[in-house]
Image (cartoon, rainbow, N blue to C red):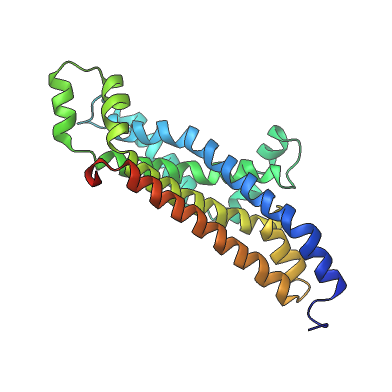
Length: 228
């Protein structure tokens, strides 16, 4: 036991892991927020802008949006993170560190979020939309007062999927200069052959994922009018 919990290991556990948990939560929540700020309107456009949507958009624009979203989604996160280094330096001032990882996380996540939002909106009953149109509702009113409110339970479930995915991305960012639990697991655990410092961050990440998942499930259930 003494060989496992060396003074150096105990120092990391006591001093660095609490900060790493905070960094992981900070990066994950902020990245999810920014990804939804960008991804939500894109997801709405993908649904309302199609030929049979409530506000059809030019075909070339819809094809361009789909190509960009599919292209960004197809790039592995670690490669995307390297490609986005110049953008991180431009916005944050550096490409390394906890805050700097928010930029590539948002770039990687917003196309995923856009597809999740698209999927949620497509679950809305078309009859409800047609009823709103027959009452003279404008496209903006249909989007804000019918489509989004009707899809709230599904959106919450998809937010949960997005936040757990971004959490996984944030852990991977530790391999190339990111902070948080991923950095400790890779730099202090894997590279130094310290099993304890690999296991503890993994366990904490699992607990954080379960926390987000349970909260998302609870909120989705509470907001589902069909269960009331």
